[in-house]
Length: 145
Image 1: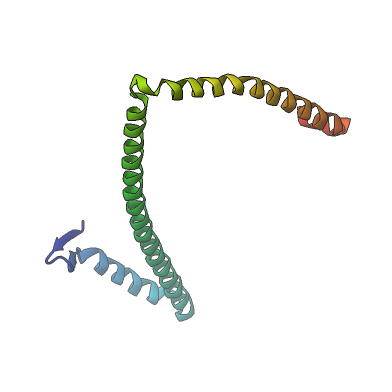
Image 2 (image 1 turned 180 degrees about the horizontal axis):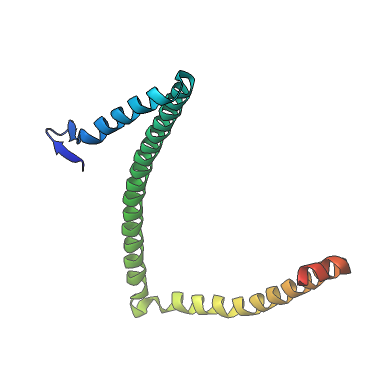
């Protein structure tokens, strides 16, 4: 059970129970009695490496938290910008009837766009057929599986 106490804005203190540490010390003394000194040094090296890994994980976790908080604020800004954009679009959609000419031009452009889209779809189909016809039969069979 860890207890974190905030004393000031920049200082943070942590109270930890000492019993687990004492048990570890006693266990280490027992191991030192039974295991030769070389094995003890290897064990200490392993513990040191483990602690470095834990420290690195804590550092990476802290950096990740900072990046996520920055991402959250950036996402919030994006939402606000998008909301503003949508409000502007609504204003444009509510144009008075005086701008009827602009609406007619837009509808004319949309009418011209439909045949072009159909031509593009046909061209895409032809290109796909051409690409598929260039694939050797063995590869085609392998792709179908």
